[in-house]
Image 1 (spheres, rainbow, N blue to C red):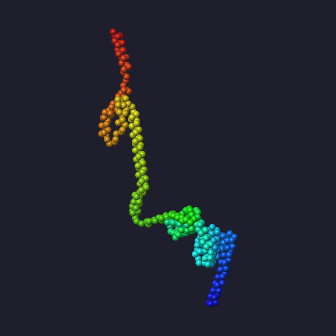
Image 2: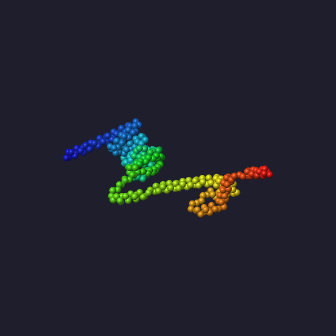
Image 3: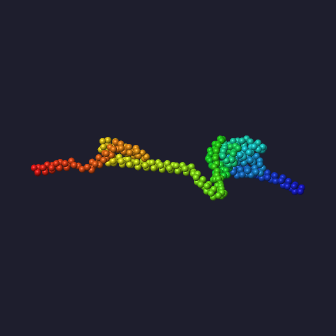
Length: 324
């Protein structure tokens, strides 16, 4: 047992210099790539070195490579984390790192997203940036960005936001449940009770008409009554026009003229008032119109005897002269 434990300790001690050597080699490769302008590849080397030794120097070099590659949000995040470490290399180069941080933040603004759904994910330009609710505003690259809020069971929402460097922007997004979750399950009641009870429930359900159906029926009824009234008015008006233009029933040669003798007759008598109608039939105006109509009829049928009268008298005188 002692021999085995000693062997394990020896292996661990030997692996530490090897790991440190690997991290150092990765750092050297990254610095060489930076000098060649291959910042994205250098960032990969620094990231691998930081995963091995977790040093402030490796994290700071990663942030500087991300700054050179234009990854402003990641560069700010990693550089702030590196400057928070108590690393001798960070203390020695703090002035340079603070200047680099100011340059990075000149390309960034702040964004705060508020939504009605907790634990919703916020995506900016296709990358997941935060989870709601936000503890603090997040950094976003200055300019126009596409913000998307996603949550399980809700329809995702995309909004376009304008981010200004050094300023705070706020965005409120309300999510709507998707159809699959908003549709309530249809509950089917068990088939219990007698047939008579089921029939009574069906009748009661049929008796409860929808308010929209009742309103529609009332509207149709009012329209039908209005149409019937218009038709009746047109019929009455046509009858009055025909009566007014009838020279036999309403002769224009009466002393009072057509207007005086027939104006009262153009208005039909109201139903249910037979006595008033009979009294009006015996009124002087009605009798004048009726007598005028009768005189007009007799004048059209009476033979004209004025032309034949002289002929009769002359024939009688001729006959008398012959007898003499």
